[in-house]
Image 1 (tube, rainbow, N blue to C red):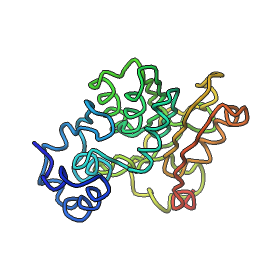
Image 2 (cartoon, one colour):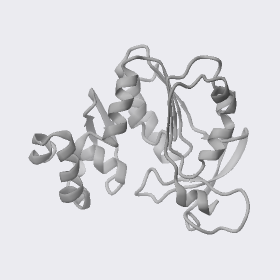
Image 3 (cartoon, rainbow, N blue to C red):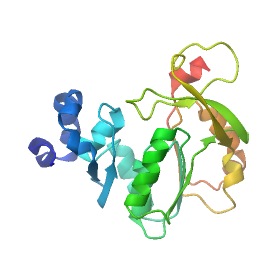
Image 4 (cartoon, one colour):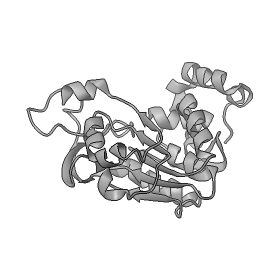
Length: 237
């Protein structure tokens, strides 16, 4: 099934505006788009088994894009080559862009939530990138061991995150299912090799991730960090 004609004809910036205005709330009317969605910035690659109703899935299914400006920046860096750490990789959009840009590119992708991790593994495998992407089904944190993890709503792949370690359940995530997942410090995973980009998107666990990679940051191994801060989750924790 092809994407709507309007979205195929419009330039990227207008395409995204049209999607949010006209199609975002009609995702379930186009189920076939979610089975295999070609990626705008990685010709020949597609993301599979996307989730109708999911913010990330819908944007990729209809446009082949997600976070357009960040995608362009990372793609320019990926073309220069190197290692990327994808912390909170979700279903693998940025991991795929990076790994596909150069044959020598490598990714270490961290994803603790079982549903997105399964889709991440499938997307890497079905696009022939298993040799370039190392997937860790673990939460990046400030200590090795285990953590309590909030699963996001079933229809939203990017809303899960580490639950606060103490205090009563309150704030965002209090009504979500909890599971125990393995946690790891990034410093224990990465050696002395240079890291071109580290992308962090972990729904409020950002301080834990940064404390867990203190060594590589102090050694200036990381050339560039893209960091999304979830203020609501931070305040709740």
